[in-house]
Length: 324
Length: 309
View 1 (cartoon, rainbow over the protein chains, first blue to last red):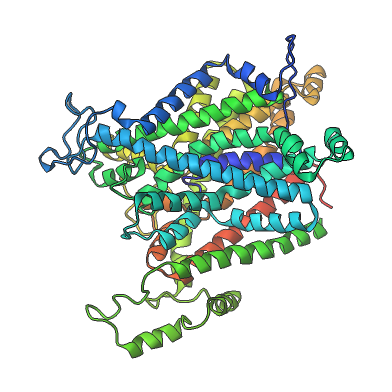
View 2: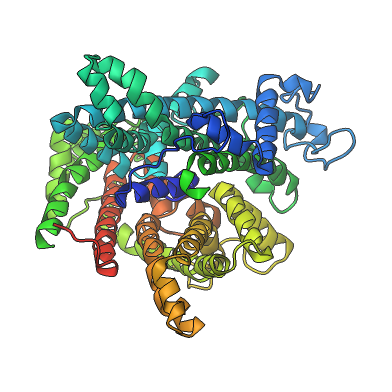
């Protein structure tokens, strides 16, 4: 099961480890030595600004976002225009990355493939973090039977091996050969990713709520007569956000990898949608004769995942006062 | 301790049933006809379909099917595929390959990951440290199918050091070196990073300073005091990881054509063989849960400060 999700798995096990060791999730508390007091995020920003790795990954992330939004800025070719007489031609000044099996411009395909990856990763991350955090807050804040029940449900979903679960879900709702629309397929892929990954997000949120719930300011707010809703929204949420934020950045990277893996296995996105995973899958029969079909989409995929993971690492270091 | 184990085992029960039922239900919902192509070009006679439907309990409600399956499972019978092959036999053939692959992967994690982590943890901020940090970040970011294809292309086709695909039905350990490395790549990077952080953190610990102050030789300080304490989290990680690896590797086994459990499960899903999928998932979940339990118990053994009530 250590496949696409493995990047997220590795990170999942960090968080699981942190939780298991019983240490409360550390929250920065603005301890800079400047005159103006800074909040948690301000402090993190002060730290981040001075890191070259942060700027490099930020540059790539912005680049990929622009590529996803306006692919026509980077290429004037049509990625679906396939002419068989130029099938598998190598890179040239005409087509920088060469042509694929069908004779479509590989560079244009790779550029247009960004959109699917970014959209799926963004939506899945949003879904996972929002849903997981909501369940986590309810479970941590309410405690008692609600907590036990929700934790057991989360255990069940956590117990399903990621890749296997995703394949089974996608085979059921998105079987190979079905002719669903592009948006529908994307939605199904996003949903299956969310369904299989929310428990981690839930556990992170739950543990930070548990460690914050009895803080003085929460007790004070309750003594002043604040409603549960107000306590959660105004006091609990801002103070529990940091771990979830860090997790979501890293999650983005691993979801890009997961989407590509599922598309590669033939259960994710489908042609004519452009996706790096599909391109890698197509390349496998021509590995010996035309390795460029594999190497270019794979390179884009790796840089994308790498920039999000690096960004996540940088943000985590900035938010974690223990590492300073 | 005994009570803790009992409680943990009890907690496993709902997770076990929940997970397997979810998978059973999902495979049941996979569209398609399990008996397609049984009678060649023409459609099967209705009597035959009715007979098969009855034989595989497909005429009963889902929940009855599930419990019948579970009852047989408790008697050690995983059931039959639609081709009348015993699933026990399929697993008996495929599982050793998966275990071999997992062991090779674990070996790489220990040898490369641990060595890199210990060396860089002892000497931070040098050239080696930066090299390992960058390499491990890279490995973490690479999805397995990319690592697999790129290494297969590089070592199999370009350099010709290995055969690109595993051809034998029960491969030897040497056949599995490249697939094992591919499978381990992500965990390997993670082990290296964890070992590095852990050692770097403990180097400043009081007990290390005491050990140096009382004049112990350098080797003893590192070998006995530092390593033993720093490797606890790493061993935990390795244990959990072995549990995950033994669950099979759909992608790695697919790329290198290894007849393991991952390959079988993928084939079974595409052919709507619910019993096979669930049987493999059962093993997988069991191995994973039990490994987690063992790791937790091992933790208490390695770190006497932890006590389980």
